[in-house]
Length: 198
Image 1: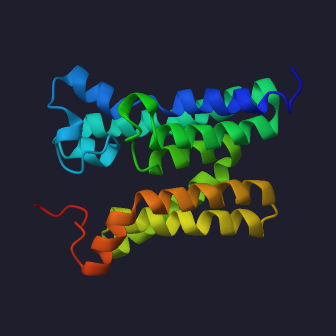
Image 2 (image 1 turned 90 degrees about the vertical axis):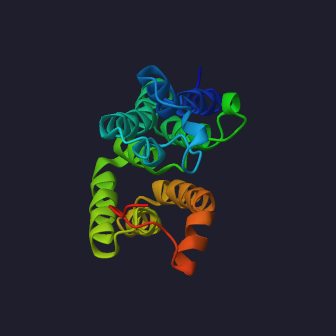
Image 3 (image 1 turned 180 degrees about the vertical axis):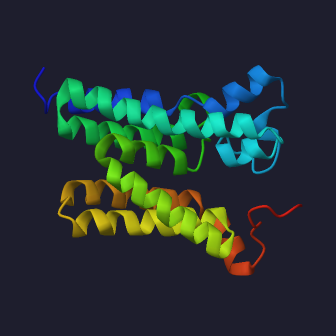
């Protein structure tokens, strides 16, 4: 199969990888209550943390990141660089809108990082450093993710990675959309701070 012909396959493979709900699987195996019935109802690591199980939250973060990395690396091996990028898009969409969970998935931060690791690992380091700096300064996890995701495609473009910059610009817009309620709370001053007790 030619590299261009592989692109739709790469999108599907990426979607299937991305739609694996690690947060839901791990919390069910651990015997906690249904993740969708607590906090934000989200299946990502931040909501897993609300169960009080830090180890499960860390495992969810790792699983959600690595499913993006795995999809990119596998499809890159099978179909080349363009297939890797399309698989990254598929993985992101799968995580946000998993068909088996009525299209209610996570917000995409971990898988965003995982896709970056697979496509351009220095970009992942940049993202994490910006996230940490913003989170340390303002103590808002959502704000840190938004700032890091907005800056990432700009930096990719500045260093000549135009195709990657275009991909991550799309992923950033999707990530912003998924954080729309967080943005409203940030504007209203009601967003929870990191480490704050409810």
